[in-house]
Length: 398
Image (cartoon, rainbow, N blue to C red; front, side, top):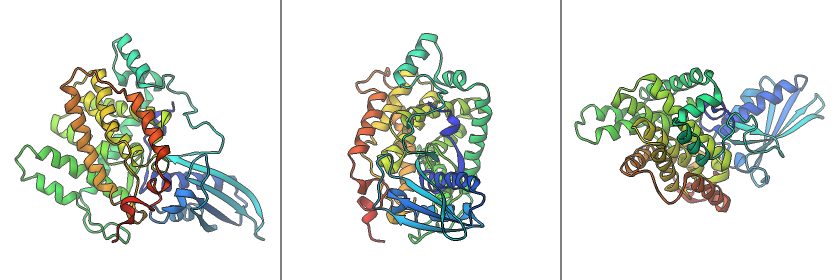
């Protein structure tokens, strides 16, 4: 498995696969073709189907400036390797192709070429299943974050601190904003109003209200193209910071505990990325928000004193109850149902934790099994329900 540096990335929303991935690809192709007079880019599959709402064309054109760039949309062309495909062409002054490159945005901002193994190439983590990691922990009487420390080295903690600072900043920025989000949906920001209501809420529901407010703050920033952290994607970027910020506030968590929690979350996300997918275009929203919910649940179970078994159970339960969740963004925007879905997943993660902590951690379906099931379910989903905006809620009139 790759480093957590390849899972948690800081960048601009609204989509890690449709915005961050194409931006990375465009930067690379531009650097390799300094003598090009202009560029042409063909977008395929899901990348073309929802690219307008996800700002794919805009980010590619901006990245390839000052050269002129022509965008060609081909949603009907679907590559077997991954549906999020794009082909860059470098042209000379007479419109002759001097270079071309087919590349895929496979989720979380990661780009890959056809034929390359989808599993992490850097081999930072030698253990590739939750079962193996749990056995490592129990044998050495260690915690999951210690496996991250042993695999990544001491430098990972400075990186995770930077990631947490970016998450905090995103929440704080999002709470200051009001008005409508960009696009034709006229969708209003709600984070600030939610947060204000928590100030006068003295009931037991106030903690949940804060989780909602903080999660909405991030998801709304993402929808507006603001700076977020892929956790594991932009579309699911609100779940982990929303819950973690509320837990830090509620329990006065020290920074080292917060970072250990992030490490546990990242390890869980890495397992899903390695053995299934975190791409909504490939696996539906179960791969994005479902994965984020599992990561958040494992993280919170650790922070609230759960055993290795209880952490695994919480993560498994969180992902299990997102199986089959479709990716059907209305109008191609990362707004409806995406924003509310992040908020709901953040509290669902905590519900999974509370449930698991009442048990001894023993249960029937393992985390590894549910990850494989999620992958198989994603393969079985019709393309209309995998970030094409052709089915499900995306057919709603607005």
